[in-house]
Image (tube, rainbow, N blue to C red; front, side, top):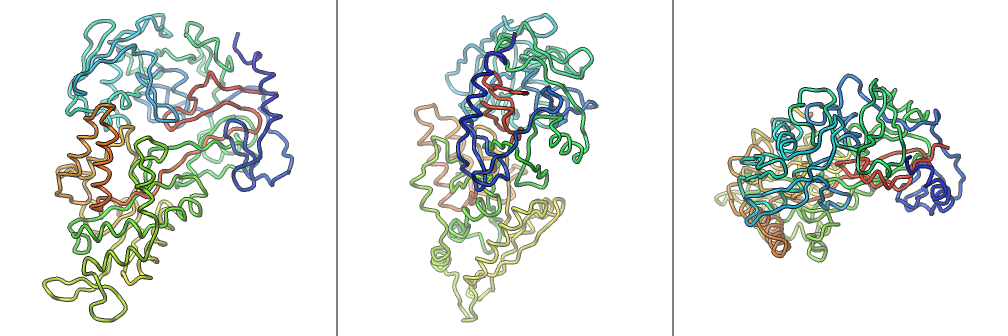
Amino acid sequence: MSKRMRKTAAALLALCLLLSGCGEGGQETNDGAETEGVAPGHVVEEKTAEDSVFSVNYDSEAGVNPIRSSSSTNSLFWSLLYDSVFTVDEHFNVSSELVTSVTTTDNEWWVFNVDTTIPFTDGSTLTAKDIVYSIQQAQQSAYYRSRLSIIYGISAMGEDCFAISTKYPNSYLPALLNIPVIKNGSAGESAPAGSGPYRLSENGDSLVLFDQNRHCQEMPIDVIYLKSYNDTSEQISAFEASLIDVVTNDPTGMYNLGYGSSNEIRNYDTTNMHYLGFNMESKYFQNGICRYAMMYAVDRPWIVDEQMAGCGTVARLPMLPSSDLYDAAYAEKFAYDLGHCFELFESANVKDHDNDGQLEILVTGIVVEIDIDFIVNNDSSVKVQAARKLAEDLNSIGITTTLRELSWNDYVEALTEGEYDMYYGEIRLTPDWNLAYLFEEDNEMNYARCRDGSYSQLYYEYLKADTAGRYNAFQEACRYVMENGGIVPICFEKRQMLTHRGVVTGASPTQYDIFNKFSEWTIDLK
């Protein structure tokens, strides 16, 4: 029996103890869910599961193979079918239920012991070969390939042990191994055997409890139904009609679906960082002082509060502020200050040399007008508005800036060809927070055309450091980036998980797993 019946009283109590909203015009539940579009003090009729079942959207044509399928729809519930080698939680902490111990002396050669008692849905039990096979398959997957490029070699050393060697030392390797595990040899199947708490039903229209799973009795519901709404408008309508019960949304991107009604919204952090980047070969930004000056030109709170409607986190350093590695006192140094930006440009002899009200640079003694070519991808209104504000601010202090709002293909071409001076960028960092590849001379993502090896070297020293030395090593890398104007960090995006009011409590979604800690959920279908 599931624990849903055992939690009914707790669910009712939670509904009675709704807290006042922390967001404008909203109410917040005891697990951080905010109700959208509700005036303070107004009583909203609770939405219920219209069909008295718990359902999620499903792309029936894509299959549920977590390594081969490219379906973002089905990826939302993969974690219910497949365990990951390691998991990264809402605080970016790393743990594993498959790996019992990890050994390394140099963060370059790793040995992992495996719990071989964990059952698969096909009746077999987990072995090291299953994990090795899954990682090897993921190395060929477009979604996982980049983060796994660090692996030099991987092999099973027996049924209960496997080893990985890496191309360079990285103490964060386990965080990069949040890879779903499938049965050895099953990569070609649309629904390979997994070891998660649910399995795909025989007719493929639901997820049903896998009664041999160690967490089977802890799950909040016995059956999760799969409903297929592939068209965006159909998906929105199905959610509003309570025919599906949980969806996700990117409120800051081009795919903001604009769900209405009184939904409960849970924002969760992501590693997607907005930043300013520079062409270090540009005559305007060859001087590191000019790049450094731009740290003070970005009104980060305005971007997050006004353009992202709070669905972001101001970050003056290239790290989520919730991290223990984030030096908040140092970060305060880089608060928005156009006056200081102007002073720094003047200290680099960027001045109004010809008294025309605009700043100029001197090239071999010749006055050269500044006209910064600033590019932004026009797919995102948030980025466009942020870039417009920055361009206006720079122009207001005499730094002539021309903004080009480009389509994705034109934007990438300009970056690749170096046909720009400054760009508004976004990057999805891996959970090791590594930025070395933005500055490595031979890396295709070195759009800055950086030739200073200290940036990447300091990041590799940070990745190499053990737990005791990690903080100081990161501070060295971070300060070099900041004080030499490698990039200008702006903010980290948040995503949203939406459920109907009063249906779900106890949820703590992450960017890697909407159903994170699903055993702690309570689902009330009325």
